[in-house]
Every structure is written in structure tokens, then in C-alpha cells.
Image 1 (cartoon, helix red, strand yellow):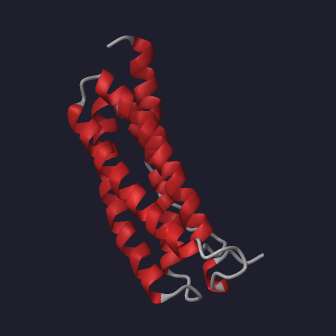
Image 2 (cartoon, one colour; image 1 turned 90 degrees about the vertical axis):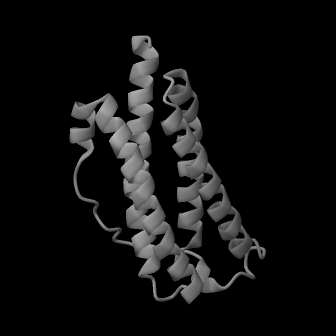
Length: 152
């Protein structure tokens, strides 16, 4: 594989890892937000577990491809200081979808079919979560339960 696509692959993979790290903090904040309905908090907690698994697969791929870059990304996640709600989670899922869509062509170009399959699987999961979240948030602005919205 040429150096430019390989470097781009490494950077896209690192971006996806950073996004998943950030996602863990958002999901934890949502799961801990007592103002949100129980089913939303429960789903955030489940998705936190799913995100940890996704991050593990990405981190292993990055470790294989670029151990030095993986080492630079290692570290703890700072919990979010602000209250998170449905719109924050929707933004997170959209960013994750974009990151996986950016990563997939480079994984395929590098003949990393396992990584490409993991990305496709993650995309399916992110899209289903986004669909569920949008159905919660879609009841027209001003009519959705106020607990689902980020406080001003």
C-alpha cells in the first residue's frame, strides 16, 4: 500500500478511536442523567458496552498498523461536565457514522477485510441507534418531553 493512503488509514483509524473515546463519556453522562426516561438511560448504558467493544476492535487494528500512534491515543476519558441529552447523543451517532464511512474505503484499499467488516457492522449499529434516537426526538420541536432536550 502506498504511503499516502496508509497514512490516511492510520489517521482515520485514530480519529475513529478518539470519537469512540468521546462517545463513551457522552453515553456515560446520558446513562447518569436522572432527568431522562429510564429506557433512554438503559439504552445509553447498553450502547456504552457496545461502544467499548467497537473501540477495542479499532484499537487492536491501530495497534497492529501503527503502535506509536496507538500509544499516543492511550489515556483516560474525562467525564462530561455538562448534562447530556438526546440531541447530544444524536450528534455523537452522526459523527460516528461519518467516521466509519470515512474509514471503510481505506480499510478496503489496504485489504483489511476484517476491519472493513467491523466498520460495516458498527455502521449498522450506529444507524439503528440513530434511527431510534431520531424517533424519540422527532415529535416536533416544542412537543417532545423537555427531559429529552439539553437544558439551555
